[in-house]
Length: 265
Ligand SMILES: NC(=O)c1ccc[n+]([C@@H]2O[C@H](COP(=O)([O-])OP(=O)(O)OC[C@H]3O[C@@H](n4cnc5c(N)ncnc54)[C@H](OP(=O)(O)O)[C@@H]3O)[C@@H](O)[C@H]2O)c1
Image (cartoon, rainbow, N blue to C red; front, top):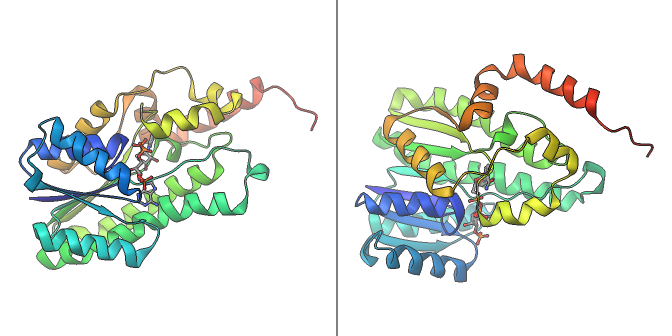
């Protein structure tokens, strides 16, 4: 089995890669920074998760379709066609809408939405032709409710819902299963960089639930891929939002507005 993990050099993607290596799969991880990729290789090989022959690293920006396609082709030349794609590459930059430059807003859309589109373009057609394959798109709990200071991120991650649900209708007759998951706050380098930029309002809305460990999030993702679960939520609040969002969100937004501090500017 060949598993490709975009964003596999860090955080959730790295732990997913470790789990698949542990099952004996061939694993390719794709990310931009070559140094971080090599560190991930040393980490994965050092932890005994896999022998060097079953792990491949490739550098590409998921937002650049030709680069990603070249990286996927190189990985498939080594390990054969991709059987499982985990699209985990993603970025977040919290800021008030009017304070965020259009470049940083666009970069989040380019990476989180178009990076996933490019990953699907590079891998899905061959799965469809072979009538076999599993894809897990990593969205976020931020796709399930609007969060103060996260306009670009919420937009990019909720757009993935429409993308996955529409493509799944095209893919299911060909036995290609496309799933989406909505991770909660997870203790990764991304979360550690993001937390100091999170507004008081966002903290109020998101509550005080402790962040998950990336190993636990990865284990749930791998289990869901094995079972072919189409939609994966984590913890009570996000699971409730995931299934009953249209009922719950108006109440949350009402409470949020009623208890918000009024600003003069
Ligand atoms: N951590 C959380 O609390 C949380 C919660 C919900 C959802 N998520 C989502 O889960 C996914 C993984 O997040 P994480 O927390 O594990 O983040 P992370 O530790 O920062 O890892 C992100 C990975 O994506 C890669 N990446 C970023 N931009 C890329 C690009 N343009 N092209 C290729 N690779 C790229 C990074 O490597 P390079 O920078 O070297 O490219 C890295 O390997 C993301 O989609 C994130 O939005 C995270």
